[in-house]
Image (cartoon, rainbow, N blue to C red; front, top):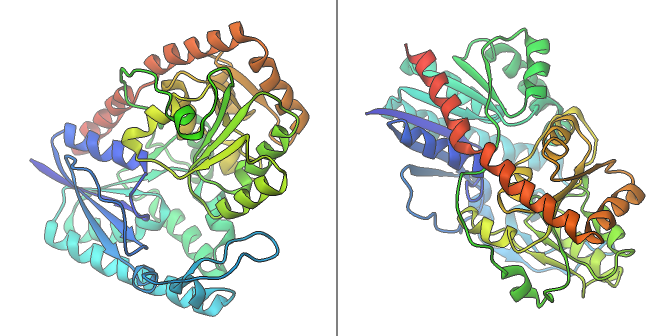
Length: 411
């Protein structure tokens, strides 16, 4: 059996795409080890899976083991900080130093693991794992795949990084992208962008589709939050950050009656969101829940009626996306209200499963939600269309593309 290493720069607790890739590689007769970062001392136990997981404890995980309590500040931000966060808070020099230490730790331990493991395939998820994967591939004569989940050099992580890291990432992608065995992206739009930027030809589109599954609709959200059966549930699941339109959703709810909104996820603006909901007096109609295990996600998602994805058009990375949650909403049989971006429109309007809107227009978004909520026949039709669309857009079909890629680069 061939062996593969999958590299990812996160705690690997709810990264559904990387989980799908890893499982698919196992299905394609690879012995797979996922190398992930560990930035928190205590993480949820990973359910038994076909692949192994090796987490590299970073400096932040060691310093983040203790918490220091603070009261919320005037802007409603939580000051319940880990010791690590307290150390680097408002100090760019310390932050740069700690981030550099984290990169060095991850690079050396991941490289040492791969030199001993000698994988036949190294699969790098996003740009921040590409350098160590590229070096290891050269030293072990391994095949290497660069899976660019986003237009990394136009994303929020890149724009908020230090000057040195931005220059480094830009050089790294330009230097390596034509030297890897395969580049993978998540949308056709992103494929065209990278083709134009780097004159690339070896690009395959593998979308973030959901696994094919049969499930029975649950009412977990109604049971947990006491939402009545006749009250439609709007659901947003994913990262709780301002650029994903979470505060706009709260503002829109102020003019919606007889409707509940559930936020399900984690993110840097979660505490601000909680304070904002209370400030607006909407806490009886808006509920916030932590992210759930990806294996149980469909049960919670199917509890809702309309899925929201109001991503702000702040960069080309956002504009070119079609995020996991669109496919998750489809698989759960939800109607959808989403940002009017090319790849999202292609799915939402192409299958008649919802409405696309200007995410900066509260009026337009409000009208789209009201249109669906007030027309039960239309809502049920969109829900039915979502389930049909989910059957046509499955991870199993995307896995066939991955299989073709591996056959091509290994022969």
